[in-house]
Amino acid sequence: MKIFRTYMIIVVTALSLALFSTASFARPHTVASKKSAVKMKVARKKVKKLRARAVVPARPSFGKIAGLHGSSDELSLKSSVAYVIDQDTQEVLLSKNDNAILPIASITKLMTGLVIRESNLSMDEPITITSEDVDMEKGSSSRLRPGTTLTRGELLHLALMSSENRAAHALGRTFPQGLSAFISQMNSKAKQLGMSDTNYAEPTGLSSKNQSSAKDLATLVAYAANDPILRQLTTSGGTAVEVGNHTLKYKSTNRLVTNPQWSIDLQKTGYISEAGQCLVMQAKIAGRKLVMVFLDSAGKFSRTADAERVRRWVELRHPAVKPQT
Image (cartoon, rainbow, N blue to C red):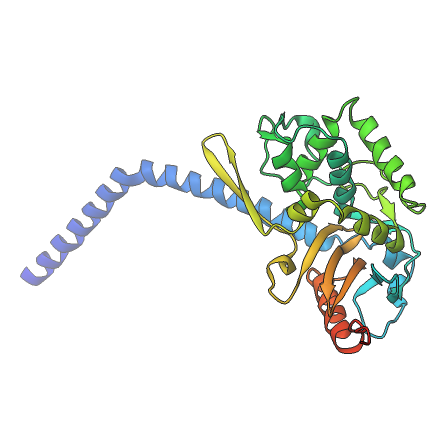
């Protein structure tokens, strides 16, 4: 009987403690549960969005739609368009669909930079990013928020090295007589250079209406490489800009510029789904000054992989011929 009484006391005490604990912590647990439920709801929505995005197939490039990826070449390049020419001798070492006219994505910015350079505008003039510079077509992100002020020179550096879209748009928007005049100047320069396959609709490359051919882009690269500032900015490995009380660090979109196996004088990368992965360069390889154009490459790293294949191929099979003495 004594043992039974002791047992009952223990049970009652335990129940009392449990009731006290529940009463004391009911409100905090309820609040926590509500917060947890809200977080779970937000998480579910994010998962649904990610699943929805995963279901939507990637938009095929113009080159793929045109069947250009069915073309073969001796190097098995992933780019549906490729063109490699010796700038000094004009010897074409590699040609693949070089007359195809395709979207060129941020390769556009090379012409943007060229027009800015030849306009003789002050590189120290401050330019403020506005809502007009925000990408409403592709929804691309940028760390240059509206209200950010940098110099024209800094914006040019970010546009050419890091392919900063708002920087490129701001450069065009603040051109004398405005954005329309800037685009007109881009097309006029293309015509002056004999780039008959080329059309520019805006200064960033986000529009698929910005189109060109490999041969035209080789002409642009060879011409732009005459400008020491364009050479310097496009081959820069990284930079930092002061924005308010903090520093923004940027790096090149082309990892080859810091590769010791390469000697690159000028380069520009580009990508939108309609264009695929794109890359243009002027580089010294095996004693040659080569202009290389790769458009509509499939795969994130395929454009640089194609460039590597071409470099090794030129070094092995097409080195510069030494003059006889």
